[in-house]
Length: 423
Image 1 (tube, one colour):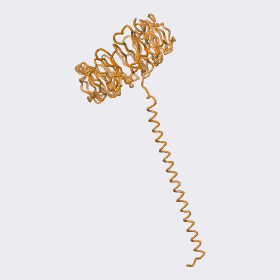
Image 2 (cartoon, rainbow, N blue to C red):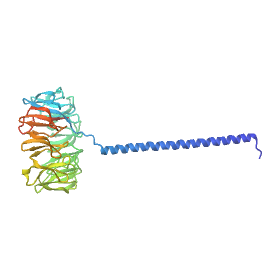
Image 3 (cartoon, rainbow, N blue to C red):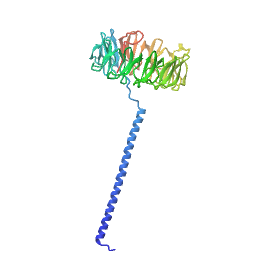
Image 4 (cartoon, rainbow, N blue to C red):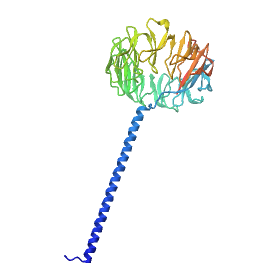
């Protein structure tokens, strides 16, 4: 074979081309591998972010719809006004009924038997026109005119004309209405979703409502379909817990949200589950069971409270003269019996009475506020209403007076001259 210079050049060019193709192939492989690595890293990041979101959702508290303290409704000369949490009067005492709550920044108010809505500054937002008025819920409020109920928006305009004998507030998109002497449910367009047929009903909660016919109760869903038979003499009307106390054939037991019996009907009385404990009464004595119906604290108390912050108030059977004690979730006595009355623990403290005077204790039974008040409310936002003689005011958890004890009281046994206003 004769090799010419031209052949040498052609061979060199071919080798150069093959080398270039090889280089490009290697670069392509590197680029593909790099791209794969980037994709793997990207997908890993996405997975980690998703896992982090799940973990955070488990360890962080869920967003709460719980109402918060806005201030206090106060009474002067048998009229009611509104003050903020520091006692600054925002609305003078000019209304015939106390201000209960603000929703959609509005509160129902009444003068001379006519109801309307005001804001926190006392500005009349919806005129005093209605014969009755409920708080706004889901942007609608039930009101009545000339004996019939309907629903208005925040501008005071009727969204659902007044046509019902009675009406509840909206909850989960539905509202209970009464017509022809029986109750059913409507949607926000005013359309009947569940035909009126019940003697009594509750609002919807967790997709369920309690309904009554002929003195017996059952549970329905939002389509009106029966979750349980209407066969219970009584039952808890809200469905926030895992189990629902219900009474059948004269005894209490527990069903789940699907109507399945979880704990047999074996108790004379029953509370609601709190902190995986539920107070139940058998043979006139109270004890505490868990979610399986097993006693965690044996029935030996003549009186008992629900658990709150890991503690409950109880009174030993036969030891009424000793007063209430405080126990933990294992039944261990934390504070010996000495209290004549109590309210549950909240934010680490509880109001208790000794004789006819009320004070505040911490979880070790030490007095944070010595018993000196004739009445005291639960603490909300670290504030409580107290009564001295016939006047009421507000204190904080340390006993400091936040709002002077000078306001009129319309109940000689309690503190209702002042009342908490929530929003």
